[in-house]
Image (cartoon, rainbow, N blue to C red; front, top):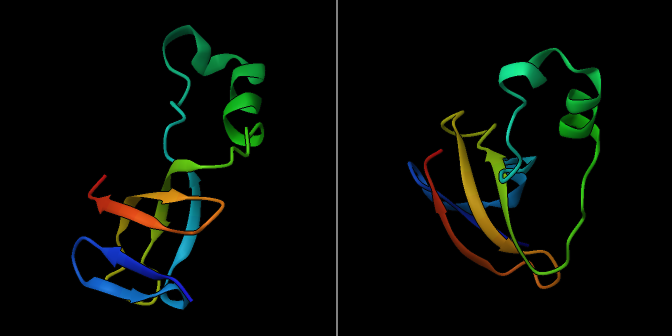
Amino acid sequence: MMLIPCPWCGERNEHEFTHGGDASKVMPSGEQQTDPEAWYQFVFERDNLAGEYLEYWHHSYGCGKWFKVTRNTTSNEIYGSCKP
């Protein structure tokens, strides 16, 4: 079981949360907003890195807010969280 630190509610059981994916990816902007390939890369292509990773989490059974968590994907150790 992981305890995920919500910036608003404090540490809670992982079952209260929904994983939102990579928080380091940047949405297409400017000319890329109309490029289907840029959107495909943003939505579907993932690196699936091992180690420290910045990701979005949603406190779906709590305050209902999104936030960022820095987590080690191999050990599930959580280094911290912050508001988006």
